[in-house]
Length: 612
Image (cartoon, rainbow, N blue to C red; front, top):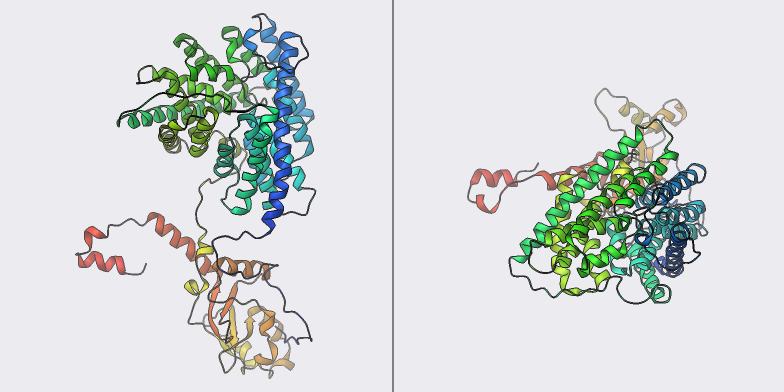
């Protein structure tokens, strides 16, 4: 590297791409989070009114299709007459959705949450205006014509689109857009169910793929804003106000765990059947545009058997919790709802999975509750929370959701036990959830485990090579070229130091290739040919993450580590040293050995203390 001359008032080159060293702390969040909070207020409002619009669209379509009236008053398809129209309406609704997906946007197919996850992880959190318009419209048509879905998946997609579109008007990073996208999704879910805590938990467990104040605070603000709007657009209080007068014995917790295990098995069965049926649709010799209409045929036939299985079915949830239902009706609803939901969702129509899961888990739990102590409605609630937490792999979301929609705080511990038991079952039984399996089939692998980044936990001094091979600044260019041309193995990069041990620069093989054809430089010293301000340097107390950023921004495979006070070279970090952190992480996960029981065994003690 040629010697550079510093100009007066010139600033040294920034090798970090704008990343500055920061004081050590628990979080990386800065004051920009205040801007995100202000924007979350707008997004939360937008998500709340988008939910209001979607609910009214569903009611409007339902009233027009089933009762021939133009009204947005809530109605139940169960009151519709059992005629040929009950079969024809879902078919026509599926045909319209297929056409909208084919000629509008294919992203409106499905229940919305996998599409939101894909936008976050793959699409830099950018969603199109077309999706924001077509998703609620297609979902309203699907549910309004009898589709056995809920509104939460579509509103998560729609609220996310509102947050993403709003963010795209400003200079924001992909991470900041993600925060506002998820804020919109959480606001929409909060408005529908009145469950701000569960919405924030859903964001953490399913959508954010991180837990940082930068994202957590704005999402919580958006959910709170949406909850504040809810009394004006949907009314006050829990969606299904319930209070169970139950006092379980100490062994009652075991029954809650058994309820969770049974719900986990139910969840695994439903997930497996869903994708088996979807594979069958893939083999059909017709375009996917026609699949929703075919799924609508099965929905209509199921409606002739049990009309209450059509639509969202909030009335069923209410009856299960209150006990205003008989065993025969619960059994019929369980099988019919499961059959038509699996067929419709596999066909690629538009609608959410949460409400159907609540009905299926609640019906299953209600039936099991007939053999357990207490009210069947209590076990129905546990079944709802457990199947939600297990199927979506979000146990905290399932726990708080069940608590918030009922307002019964006395059920929190049983809910947690049942939900975590179901979560454990599905994690052990299935590699992926009902949400991530769809994404995996599109070629994308997702890991949903959080952990501390070892690059941010480890300091440079812990992995640097302290005994560094260096070249002296007084060495000539000719001698340096001869040194690199030796037969024995030499490094590709050597730091250059002066007589005080200060870093003077770096010599690479690329420099040698430039110098060896120029005989005029043969007698020039390295001290005159290299410069310490033309290379990135780290400090011993820098995090390894900062060193990795230096390597990326400067395209250097080795970074010298210097003492910040004296400027002396104290170490060197190469790319292979970064990889050793991965090895130490694997060792922490896989190296299993006892210590306390074998401390008196000299051989075991020696093995435990020996370096790996």
